[in-house]
Image 1: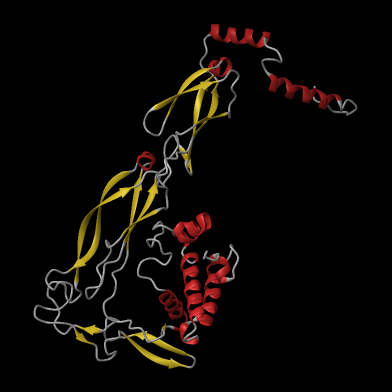
Image 2: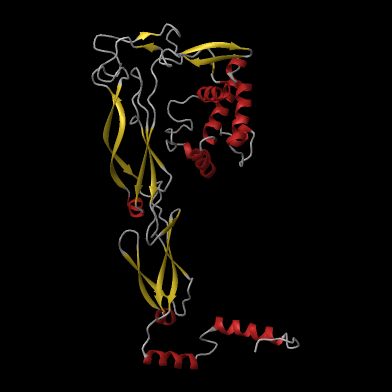
Length: 388
């Protein structure tokens, strides 16, 4: 069964801003939440569908990918979350609970009172990487140094001194959150004693001070695919911050920025550049050499009478497709005719002779323009003032 359009799921148009998305999601999530529809499997499916739609449209990068490719943006592991628009380890109820915590200062109790304390997945990390346009064309393998927290070897991440273990928090009974009934909702707040961990450390590790983590700089190798564009991100699963209490690590997201090139401008898979053409070559025709992004050059034929602004297309000389399907963009060369400077007396005389003997066939644009001026003036012969 095909998926519904995410905008239709939330009942908003494609120009909806963040406020409108949040308002629509909040109403639908309350309507279909499992706590209000116990035993109703269709309501549960709608709740998940609404959460999935909001997870994509509330994220600017995921929304941009969805607007461009639709649901295909998240198929076959191409999405940031490895095939799921939510991302790894994210549940639609978590989105709903986080949204309501911003409004009410607490969380929303899920069906069955899901435990929020205990081990927590590690935080995701971001790394900004700049590459050249030539590197984006060829792809490369880059070594990066990422400062991040790693599990303390002295306590193996537990935060406790050797021979000790974390004790269950007596205030929240190990849940990490305390509850309070407020009318229709059951609200949750983070336990102020254990800070949501569900455990307390009586005897902290001397190496990490009870945090279970220490700061180190890690060296990682990253493969940059050919055809990557600015704003794209590469996800390295499990290379983020370590989790607490033995929970899995977060992910590392590498945001790629392709710096501007001195010669080429990029628009999707195509490249653009401007090339100077000598006046004689533009008039008589000939060939010029054009640099290409791979460091080589291509010989381009200039037709007789070429004018400034004319574009020539070199097929297959652009950027490769990021999808790896063998397709490549094109290179468009815009010509501008160079006017000669510092002429000798002989060269000036030859140009004057050419100018004297050339007619409408040599300068069709100029003759056409002058003809329009003459007709304009002839149409205003009765005017008192007219250019001489």
